[in-house]
Length: 267
Image (tube, rainbow, N blue to C red):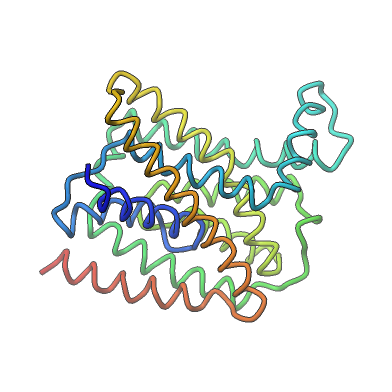
């Protein structure tokens, strides 16, 4: 694969993974609309690894607390904030893992990868994000995260398996409707992305392990580095903007793109 193709792929994944605009939808659209060769699952794994390291680095203080808490949780203790957060993250990840397996085994996973589906999901869940952001109260912070809220957000997150929905977008939507302020909603959505990306990455790695060769490893390494840099920049930009603006700019982008995709799909 050419360096230009790898750079485009990494930039799309890195920038859109954490912004509420659907990274999977954009990755599917790349070959659908441009005629470029589909990047394949191996490179999907690589760019996801790059974004994973970016979110871990950006939220390292929180990740460290959760990691230490995971050790206590493994011993059956939920007596620290880190252990409780680790429990919440595990619980929130269960729905997306179960639904993901069901879609994969049933074959419906591939049926959802169409321009029309992505267009509708961009449009519908863009409007839902706007509604939640405008009507949701701002009475909760990250420290108020509860097991009940983790379950609700986890169920919403499972909807992101439909391309165009956006994993970060749907979890932010759920958090805003539950009453979390914008920065806390985004922060929880980013933390929830870590076990989800690890789970999806591990699953895809098993599938593509037999395809591995040196050229693929080289392309994967390049794509991962580019995706890491792009994702880190996107995270910094989003949290900087949240201090002064709402999620409306992302909603506008989603609605415009959704309408364009539906026009393309049906004409």
